[in-house]
Length: 365
Ligand SMILES: [Ca+2]
Ligand SMILES: [Ca+2]
Image (cartoon, rainbow, N blue to C red; front, side):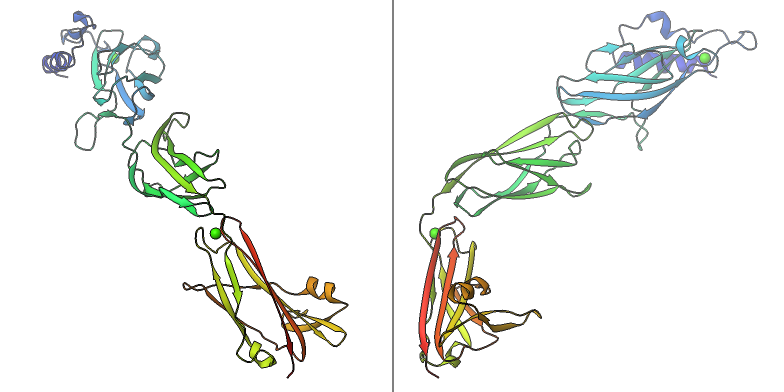
């Protein structure tokens, strides 16, 4: 124990942090003569951080905990004063594991200190957050979250099309996830990993209009605390035009073999064709009706039906997938035969505008 050196250190720190509210006598209290009788309390209490918050937002309460012990004085007799570094001080309850709460009003980098004094007046002034890897007192950074590094989003779309928001949330003091609010009453939670903070979300609007989009995040250790970032509006345009769905008539339309591969077009001028599109094929052979459908084994066959309505009902919907040019093809696994071939089709654009076609042809060979 080197009381003289400790006193100098105490005075230096106390001066640096303007520990003005501490009684001056306390700063010298551990400068007792080394001639104290054996068993006297000569050692100042210790304070070990248990859990610390190193990042937070202005106006949000931070919680720091510290284990406080002394070699002689009981825990309840150790006095404590916290200097938060923003000009305010507090005297937390004298628990062994001491919970300290403070709300910083302003952004800044703070290095809070704590003074622990035992019954004999030995006092230690310690960094409240302990020392970092560099041996220096750890700092607490209070800042509004620079949480949104904005990357990309849709600003205009046609009804039915997906509006996307994607970016990177760059803040250590953020939630495990964030939420996109689309402005039409709906929202989507965004999940991301501990290290990766990229986010992406997509939404489909039902009604044309202008919608404000925002991102909300919560603090990682205070989920109830949120910050909202307005991203601006997206404009959704109406689409009232039907898609165009056609079936190409074969060059030899009366020959069954011409229908080995059906082909046609599916296009839409606005929202796009990814609503739904399918065709169905039935056939009348004399008085009998057949439908192109699957059997119990899952293979496509021409199956006998009771009547025309039954044939329509049991016909399999054949999905039509247009390529980038709007051309679709569909290969039939089984050819029709002589008789009347009826092919119908239905499609809708992304906005829900529907269209149909009906094709009828007598096959003679
Ligand atoms: Ca002591
Ligand atoms: Ca359309």
